[in-house]
Image (cartoon, rainbow, N blue to C red; front, side, top):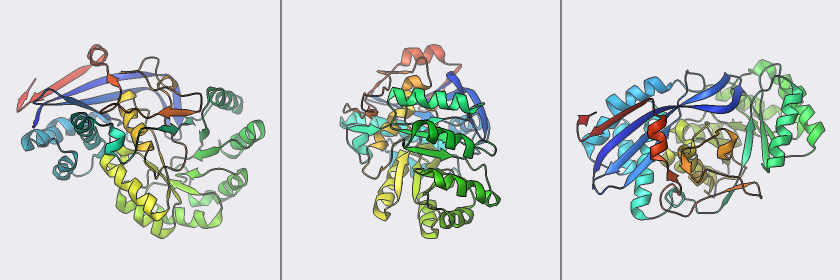
Length: 374
């Protein structure tokens, strides 16, 4: 059967509190959801996670939404395919825009899993089980607020803490966390805010027994990461630098990374993310699943990917109530008493997408049914 209809919803969801990185702060998130429906009536859901501005990625939600409407969805409808890999081959005609492509591809993966009556995790090489949950803590106005936040998240049961850093907020806050909380699993994320001239800072951080240092330098500078990897013993993890399987292999060959943060939206889909995890497992590269402040829809795919056998570190997959007062899935994602999140064993995403709530929250809805746009 072929895809009969595609719906695209635009929402704006407020975060419970501002989340700040070296790119800046965010208090609300544009949310673009894609729903596909095949002729038998079964549906699938995906999420576009592009932000307001071109900070983490060149994609912004407004431009990506335009690309979805004008190019990517028409390609899908003209082809008639509901196969995720065939869709990605067709969508390769559109240069770039991995986040836009991911939204449609996720919806097709969800649809495929529902039709096959298997969990998305099984489609992506994983299996229903508990996955380790870590928490990412944004840059705080002062060290006291950081320590309060770390204590709160540890009390909630998160197994690993990640602290966002930037020039002027790095060695001292990390040292303070170590002094206050001892040998907790701890890592830092710079989001590319430093350069090789800041080597001394990383030599100081190297003394803090961190799990890893994530994306210290610019996304397009694998050579600087190679140099740093030879200067310190803490493993280097790359995020923004790894946008494809080819990037991962080149980074590994250069010695620029020991660990990779896998985000499906960054690499162009959960199918590509699975390939990346397969290769990481083969090459012995550490891996974990990162987040982009997803709603419960996008989070479902992160949970599924985290059950892949290549994942060897706690993931940036928090409970729904970490970011949202009210999520758009039922049940919302929750943290177990063991500091884990359960991978559902139900078909598809494993949670119910609350279409009525989405309809009420939507600022805009766009639909296409075999060439008819409403």
